[in-house]
Length: 423
Ligand SMILES: [Zn+2]
Image 1 (cartoon, rainbow, N blue to C red):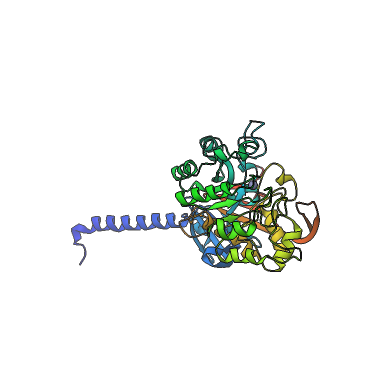
Image 2: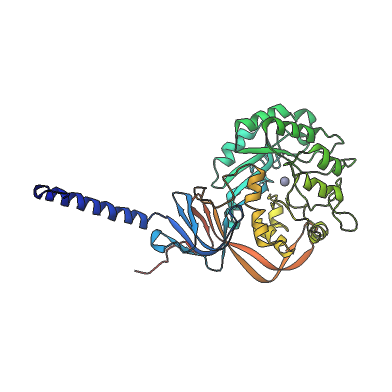
């Protein structure tokens, strides 16, 4: 016998307490999700998910991804039927060191843009600024942009100490210091995720080699914006000798002065370019204002030479020309034959791996709840390349909803909002 007669009131109390606790528990369970994104087509390449699923979010983290998560377990429901639900996009090449110095170009100058105005509306939750600041002005960039943005801003540090503030700074070999660059990177682990080389026009390999040296010291990858050298430097030597596996070659579909393009005159991908991919060089789109040409992208993609990572090279002029935004760049590649799951991988998990931020770019339970809900438009659409030439296409992605650390930061049609009603 569990209770004696005299124990009954206490027993009742215990039972009552247990029942209350159970009721409280079920109430908590009923509300354990802050947000439930219901019935969307989830693509989460890291976890091999590609199908209709629900995504539950709690406390700013992904709580679970499953079919048929009950709606009474969430405080707010978003119906994503007919839409794609993907990890928040990672744009691995942007210039967001906007500032007020009219002579400073991309490094506290007017050629850069502030991230929040351009990211969430195209599903991007993380950007990697590629070399706008150098070791000298990174603290200013951190205060001015990283700490002041809702977008997660990471960066590759320019090998030039003054960063990308135009010539003559960017031609000054004396300001390209591997040790000082590496030590600044090491002071900011996970935020400074690599080293960048760009815009040097001399015949020397020093900028590339010093960036790689900094990358070795800090154990991070290097991204190369190659070209403009007089005389041109060997692309083969860059890809097969100077760079290490894991280093990134951006502007892969460019055809610019002072740089050998990746396809030859017959439109065939050069054998040493394929060899470079085999040895682990990462090929990044970096569309920009002058670095994506149909004349390169169409034949290369026909030969199956797809990008490892998709990025915009966002700055003041690229966003108003053929590039536009991250989803427009992804859409171009879809129209050229890249599969949706490949394109999402190249803009989520793949860049996260390249910059060694393995906590990002996927929907694993416990990871930051960065999510993009995308609509695929179909119709008679068009796209422009860096030469200003138009190519028709039938597919274009648009962003309906963006969630950053569990908070709705973009909602095009109010799918996560309560409906207004007149009293
Ligand atoms: Zn750039």
